[in-house]
Amino acid sequence: MIGLQHYLTVSALLFSVGVFGILTRKNAVSILMGIELILNSANINFVAFSRFTTGGLDGHIFAIFSIALAAAEAAVALAIILGIYHRIQTIDVDKAQELKG
Amino acid sequence: MKEPIISAILFYFFAFLTLGSAFLVVYLSNIMRAALSLLFSLIGVAALYALMAADFLATAQVLIYVGGILILILFGVMLTQRIYMAQAFAGKGQVIPGAAISLGLALCLIVSIWSQHFPSPGHLGDFPTTGRIGRLLLTRYILPFEVASVLLLVALIGAAFLARKEVK
Image 1: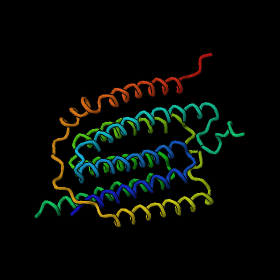
Image 2: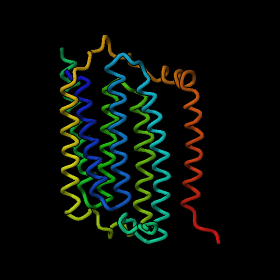
Image 3: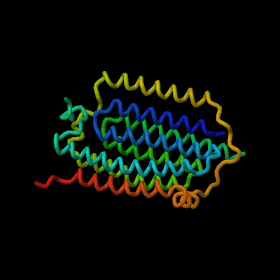
Image 4: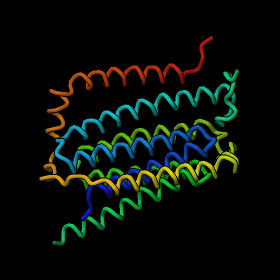
């Protein structure tokens, strides 16, 4: 029987994969993909707790808001990445260090 | 009797699809292929929502993530042409500690999940959720709903402002 803990396990593994992507990539777009994986794992948790406890649909509402925020975040992040690309002709995050003191 | 077995098979299939493509997202050095495996990972998550009887969320996941965010990311990949030249990974000095950190994190999370006893629910949620979600959004969650719409407007105007060519 598939229960709450199975879904939480999938979500934990997805979260760790996303963290690994953020930690090891140098490419800004790849880091953005890692962030999307982490947001998805959080959403799985929301929906799983909403399904397997008596909390009603509040978890679904939270997941909807988090999807909307993820859309806004992706749009702004890609605009920033394009801005960095126009400025220094690369999206290697190690090269974008003009503000470094 | 048959239904739990089928749903278990479906769960493991989509869990492996999601996790396998998520691993490819962080493993492949060709960023275009990584974006394409992100597609399969997001679809797998949508299927997991469907298995949890979250019909509206499964649809929203496909529409917004696959139809919106992934297309945005692909645009980002294609608009920054030198993307293929950029070195995909940080040096070995960063990959090994990163792998250690994320493996340790996964281990801690899984151990704490399985050592916890969650009370089993009296009954699982009812299936059609869309109508109730709509009613909740327009009654109890009306303020966050409106704030989110303003936030989306602000974020999209800001994104258009940031990405435009500078006018001298």
